[in-house]
Length: 250
Ligand SMILES: C[S@@+](CC[C@H](N)C(=O)[O-])C[C@H]1O[C@@H](n2cnc3c(N)ncnc32)[C@H](O)[C@@H]1O
Figure 1 (cartoon, protein in one colour):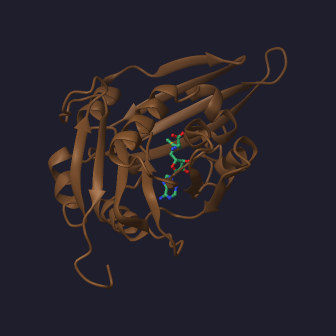
Figure 2 (cartoon, rainbow, N blue to C red):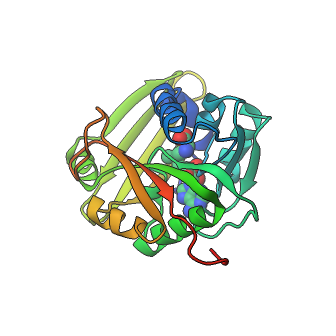
């Protein structure tokens, strides 16, 4: 059996877009939020941009930058969106030395940061890279969603002749381990196994709001149906505005 790849997303990267499809609904939701809360936005940064699916969907009306720590995901993003600036880096520590009007962190990328100190670091990085009054938009897998996924039978999905088997283990709550196996079809009955383990952290919404409060004012929260989210929602999308600076160093 193949051992899991060393860097998260190394094994999954070549198959990621085929498994996930186009994020049309998420892109529409982001464009709607931007048009309502930051209609004059010009510059957008995505934290954990992966293969660039969302950046590509957002279109060239915005000057776009993406940061991701996976070199292999970024290889796909470079092919997919040649007009986007892509930077290899960690979203808890990066410094670009410039500011953006909107920062997004979506498709449960924040859950991939596996400590609450790390989440605080991401919020602090976002604060430093946002212009005065800029928008931070992010989504989460809620704790309830991770519990539900942990209780479910493994998900089996056939795509392009290959098979994905994904199993979420949340027994070590608040850490969820996503065990992902892709059986890549080579020829006849020959398959190659790609194995990845991705760890996510579940954080209750009350704690997320408390962490945000230092640097941001929450403008909107919604679940997948547009209703206020709870810790049992399938997903929570939060829109927050960077607080006014209180000192010259902010
Ligand atoms: C679920 S994918 C989402 C990709 C993209 N946002 C999308 O919507 O398709 C999570 C991405 O976050 C990246 N990631 C996770 N933790 C990271 C970190 N600490 N710093 C930078 N990138 C990170 C992974 O490499 C991966 O590309």
